[in-house]
Amino acid sequence: MRDRELYSQILGIRDPWQVVDVELSVAAGEVKVHVGLAADAELSCPQCGQAAPRYDKRYREWRHLDTCQFRTILAAEVPRVKCSEHGVKQIEVPWAEPGSGFTALFEALVIDWLKEASTNAVRRRLGLSWNGIDGIMQRAVRRGLARREQAPEYRHLGVDETAFRKRHDYVTVVTDRDRGCVVHVSDDRRTESLAAFYEGLRDAQKAGLESVSMDMWPAYITATLAAIPGAQEKIAFDKFHVAKHLGEAVDKVRRREHRELLKQGVEILKGTKHDWLTSPKNLARTRKRRFSELVRSRLKTARAWAIKELAMSLWGYVSRTWAEKGWRRWYSWAIRSRLEPIKQAARMIKKYLWGIINAIVLKADNGHAESMNSKIQMLKIRARGFRNKERFKTAIYFH
Image (cartoon, rainbow, N blue to C red; front, side, top):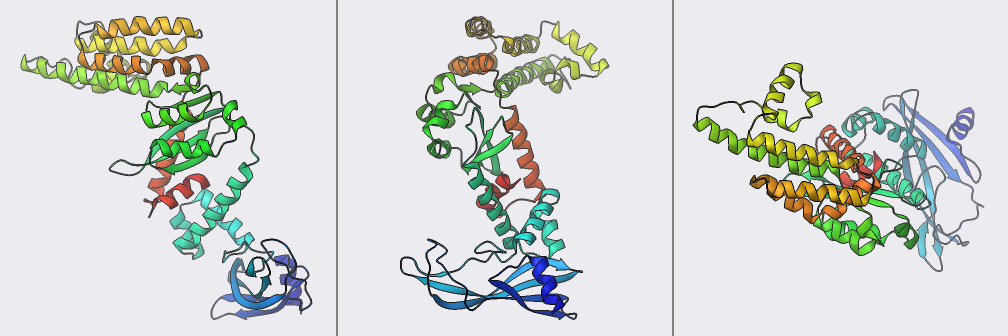
């Protein structure tokens, strides 16, 4: 009698449910708590809520929090009802979600553990299967996304792709830059991948967007221009990606010039690759002195580096008009540089200059999305990869 009362309190069992028996198996290291439903309990369809007659019952078990290191199982014969509109349906139980083999309290414990340790570690410590862990994560994600339906309007979004596997297998990740969280994950990085997210937004949410930061990937640009009112003034191309393209151009100039100098027996550019790609303030004192001499030289690489550095200084403008003038003067220098990699990067920048100007004026960058991308890749490493893309997407939402 005392055992039944104790577990009624621990489990929070209330009428019309009640604990009818408690079995302890020391050999199996298990406690099984049997719960029953009162015979005169009124039943209703779980889908529409209308009263419905009892049809039959099905035996079910749920894993609960351990009792004094004993694995604890909650067991019950759960009635099914026959609804005139929806047919035969199993009623819901107050201690677990439909379709779950774990009580809500046990799932809460697993969720807390997953925040601190890898999926494999939690699985081993709690004696769970991969599918069991995945089901708990999926239900947690569904609850979180359902709560977000009431979330405030989005103002600043970031769009980026992150690799699922090698060979150009990606997922598209949309982040809310103001709240610092992932709001959408979809397969691939096609136009449809981002368009699916926009289709789920209300008109007021689309109109309320002030900026959408992204790299210069045509699929994302096309989707945003088609879905967001005034997108031509809201799409912001990230400084990081502009710097990346210019840095690659400088490195191409350095490699080409280094080969030419080696033919003449000159090794002045040997071992300097990272110096040209790193901010001078981050260089060690000895390397900084040598690098200063290279920068002041007549090397083609020094000229390419100066063009790149001038471009990076143009992000400090406030006025759209002055920003445009500054970039056009820069383009004139770059295109007359006689350095083909720099000229190619300049043509690309000219093509997307409108979005670069937006980023400068709106003070918008994709730094948070890039940071989120790094966290996602660390998550993938910690998990040692994912069996399929759906589990990968669930993990991104969850964490």
